[in-house]
Image (cartoon, rainbow, N blue to C red; front, side, top):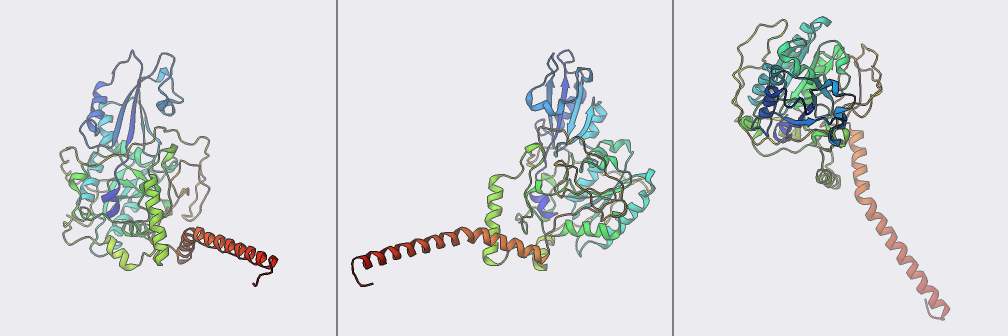
Length: 446
């Protein structure tokens, strides 16, 4: 949670406004709101707005082909919103109110206040009253928020009702964290860390004290991979000024991850990990292997990474619950004035089309049952379950895996050098053999 707050810059949601020449700017008010919310317009939202005029023959510039695919002039004017993972969040003409709720809402304001107020993560409970498990999911999250965190750490709880009109756009974002979530009924619990980064949810039987305690342990453990795109989950669209309100424990020396678990790029070829990132990570892995410290993430290291400094501000309460289906309302926290900060935003992929033809996964009540992944549009862990507890990368790994990784790193480090030594010895042997043969042929003494 510390590393994510310090280092993970938000990826952008792409809003394309498709229209014909005759339409002009028919949705001027909604578009003005979106432009103003973007960084280019002076706001703090991780949104990228583009005006796209559709030609008379129905074509669009090549970079917008994927977002326009399957649509026609009869759909115009049209807003198409895609997430940082390239998934479609909204594809319809937005009203000014919908444009406003796309970038901000009461629950997201609360998330920003809690995370920047010192909480070491938030459990966001997406309640589904129709499924009958909404109250139990919220009670479970509240209990875990009190009992699971290590001493000195606080975890917030925010509840959002699935059919709450004020949170409709947030709900759409949450249901696109993984490609199949919109097909699943039931309450879900998402871990939120960093600057509004949502981890894959716990669903159904996975919403247990044991499962959510495991989620809290993951949020508080050493960072499993410093490259954001290699972690499951995605950013939420928020207008909070994160850079201006970083908690005190996130404003010091940047933290380093304990090891590189795997390296992925975001969908449709938009890379988040640069060659420099990969080279640096490989160098660190080789250095760790050479010194016998590869994948060392013991209690001391974990304490160093996760323990807040003594200057950490005291949170208002250990658990904060946004008003939900069965919770009393609380006074709204005033939204912070939106002034440009230094929170750099990375652009999302240009394409938003999900892998086609994926069949729904049959419902399974066993949280450990695993089915095949739909395709490349799924989270990096690639596991889909209707009732599930996601497999999250860990700062600590089994000793067998650590040993195998260390051996692999040593092999990659020493392999070329061993081969060079063998070649040199072979060449020396050939040279010595040639000298011996010449001396014997000349009658010399060997």
